[in-house]
Image 1 (cartoon, rainbow, N blue to C red):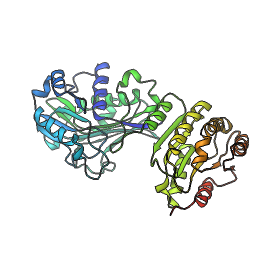
Image 2 (image 1 turned 90 degrees about the vertical axis):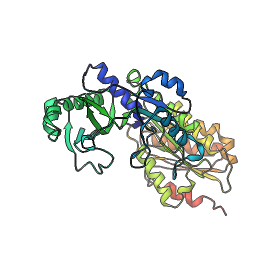
Image 3 (image 1 turned 135 degrees about the vertical axis):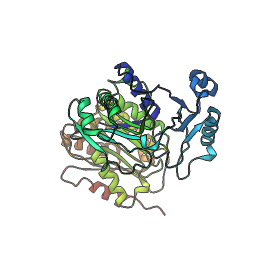
Image 4 (image 1 turned 30 degrees about the vertical axis):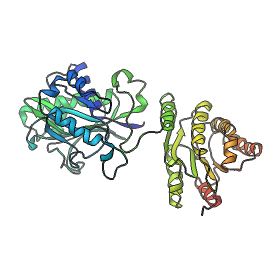
Length: 426
C-alpha cells in the first residue's frame, strides 16, 4: 500500500460527495469550494461560484503544505478581489517562499466562517497495523500541538456504531449536539473505509448554526486502489510535494506503476550524479541509499527508487531504460557506477527481471561505454543463480565491467566496492 496525499479541495469534495450519495443529510454545511491556479480565469470562476462575490472569504495554499496557519499562509475575512490580490502576490515567481525550492501555484477559496476558538474540534482517522484508529479532541486549532497524548481514541476493527462513537470519543461535547457529531464521525469513517483513505485529519472542524463545517483538512489515499476508485475519486493526478516539480521521467515511471500490479518508484535526485541505483525492494532501496550517504557520497547519488512485486520483463526493461537514459546524458570525469542490488526475493523471479535489465543494458551499450560505467550486481531469491550467470555472460559479451555477487555477500558490500573503485575527481 502506497499512501498518497491529495489536495485539501479534493479531500473536502470527496467528503461532501460521499455524504450526498449516501444520503447522510442535515449534518454538513453547504459545499462551497473553489480552486485557483495559474490557468484560472477570475471572471469565469466567479460566474461559476456566485458565492465568491457575495461573502467574505478564507484563502490558503493548496499544495500539501503543513502549518499554514502558524506560518501566516492564510488570508481570512477578505473580499474576492482581496483574495485574488493575495494569491497573485504568492504566484509571482520573484516572491517564492523563503527556504523553499518552489512557489505557490494552487489555492483554495471558501467562505470565511466566524466562530469562537472554543468551538474548534479535532478529528483524525488513520490506518494502523492493528486496525483503523479514530481520534477526537475537543480543543482543535492551530495551537493543538502534539495531539497523540491528548485525544480520545477508538480502534475500529469492522463497523462502528453512533452509540460507541458518542460513548468513547465525545464525552466533552455538549449533549445537545453529541448525536450529530457522532453521525458525522460515523459517516466520515464509512467514507474512509469504503473509498480507500489511509489518513484523514480535520483540524479544526466547527459547528455553526447547527451545521458541521470542516475548516482545514488533510488526507491520503491508497493509490493501489486507484483502478477500483476511478469513478469515485475523480481528481486527476496525485500532486507532488511542494518545492519540486516531477520530471518527465518520474511521471513516466509513475504511469508504468499505475498500470501494473508491481511497484515501480523513481525519484531523480541529481541528474549529473555519479552513483545510480537499480534496486529491487523498498527496504533494500533505503539500505543502499543510506549506505552511499554514510560513506560520504550522498552528493553523488543520482536517483532513489525501487522495482518490486515481480514486474514482468517489459516493465523492468522500460524502468531500466529510463534510468540509463538519465544516467548517460552528461559525461563526467572519473566515470560512473550502477548498483543493481536487492535483498533475497521471496517471490520475484530474479532471472526474469534480469532479462529486462539485460535488454536495457544492451540497448544502452554505446552510451555505457562512453560514460565509463562500471556495474555491480548483488541479488538473491528464486532463480538468482541463473540471473547472476546471465549478468556475468553479459559483461563478457559487452566488454563492460560487471561484478556479480550472490546472497553470500553482504547486501551493501557492492556499495563499498563501487565507491572504492570510483575514480576520484580533482
